Image (cartoon, rainbow, N blue to C red; front, side):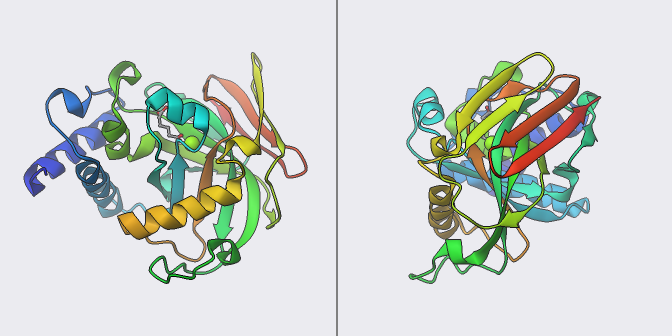
Length: 254
Ligand code: 0L1
Ligand code: MG
């Protein structure tokens, strides 16, 4: 287990990488981190951001597709935190100069209508959700050449860098909807079923993570359920995520 000083030092390294837009080496090159250490570094990183005035706006799940789990050699999802500084309006601009090597993922977002009590044994998290929307997540690993371990990516707040949410609709089954992620040069398609066999399962998995990792889930929080396709590089111009029957959301990278 890392001591508190080392946890803070590693959080400072990741924070500096993000704010200076400069990559950093894998923490595993110099330190042996357990998964508990990694979440402690993530918490210290978020403490730095909130101390600067950022507000937590929700949570994001990562590694929710079997393909990505297999790629990373893991069987557990990861959870990171979203802040208001990461939010991009639908159709809004993203400044590429503020990011290291960004990628974008097509996702589904949920909105919590009330606080969730993860400790209550009979909590049904789906009853705490009032709305669903198409979403784009911008990920920007702070690690050089994307060389990171599972613990590294958790410490790095799961590569979270930005998100945009389309129009909210009342919650409904979004278990197998076609998803299209496109920009001027390329297009990838997938299905929401890739998100843990349906994004509602991602919510249930989040509840379990919230129990084990003491993640608060509050009314108004956004939950990004995970990617429906592989990530695409975020390049200049318009990027769109369209989820059939749910709508679309765009960002413009400048
Ligand atoms: O959102 C996610 O699925 C987490 C991505 C973390 C790994 C990466 O940066 O590719
Ligand atoms: Mg994601």
